[in-house]
Image 1 (cartoon, rainbow, N blue to C red):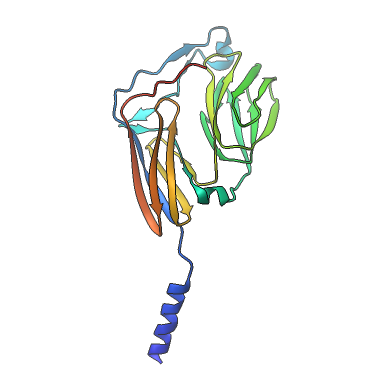
Image 2: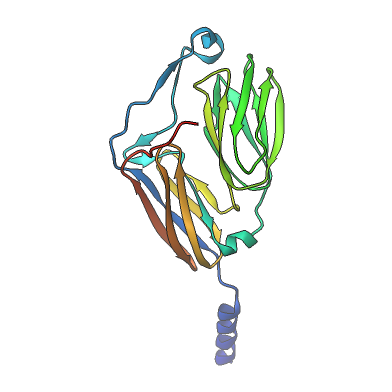
Length: 229
């Protein structure tokens, strides 16, 4: 009787589908962090505050915030994402969040919580560009259909910048204050793991995912040389 129960137990274990894997790690900057640029808002200070500090490179104890990581590969192309609606707000003359990541085919909703006008302007190749004057309380929605990095700026307030990172699938992550990332539910297979940061540039690693957790750590030593638009 014991042998029968044990055999059934083994059959259940070995016939069950393999669990998805997890990729986790950190993004670090080992170079010297330049002081952030401070913008005076001048005549817009009542609505915006007297000054705005650039969020282009936020590093604490070598940990990088706002780095976006995603997977690429043959399997990723077959995966269906989990598109929904994500929001980019204009509040106190700042884009919130500064970096917004979303899977392709997600609806981007842009809000304006400020009492003054803005002109949102996106720079993209594969998605329809946006160039719209926003009145207080106005909103606008658009589906982001293709994977790419989209820069966002305001033509009325030069310090306002943000990035929308449209990823190939829902297999992505954005680092927080502690510079860590985690991508769960990764099907077994081989992939390219990409990391992007607006000031540091990009890196790519080849990863092989099975059951369990694998760790990948990225380091940047210097800011990327980025040409002006």
